[in-house]
Length: 189
Image 1 (cartoon, one colour):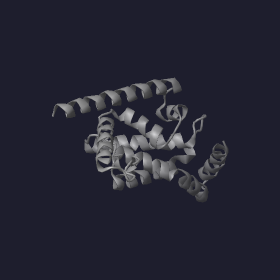
Image 2: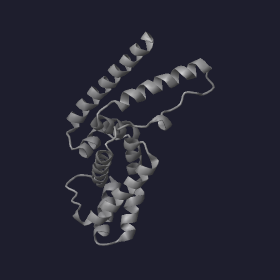
Image 3: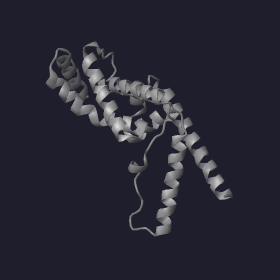
Image 4: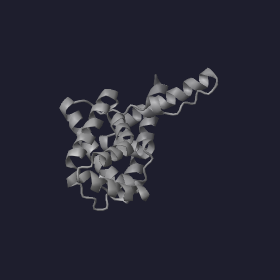
């Protein structure tokens, strides 16, 4: 709760032209926004560029920020979401989530065949996640990478907590079915 109070004070100061106040907001949120963008684009350079644009845009428009019970971070995530959507539209690329570097490894002095099996399971999971629509990828990132609650995700995605909970369960079911399909295809080869 103290971050919200501090954010309100910093936003007020930054709106009045206090660059140091905006700098503190930047330091507080830059890593979360970068991670979100990186997982959506799968590209370090693009994530750096788009993160820079998020904060440039928020700096230029902070005087227009109206809290209305929505955390400052939700505003930043919305800006990031819009910029990523534009990035994909401009490039006409298929959206992918690149999680390979961030999936916990189970290669702790295990037998090679166990490590291979774990790696194959992780690859199936990643393949299934990559096939999800953009909205569901966003949900997975906010839930598992950022560790946000359903209520917080709801604010960012402009949905009720109940709608997020429902989408979450449908998303997990889709991933489970896709993994099963991949396993069946693998067994038939």
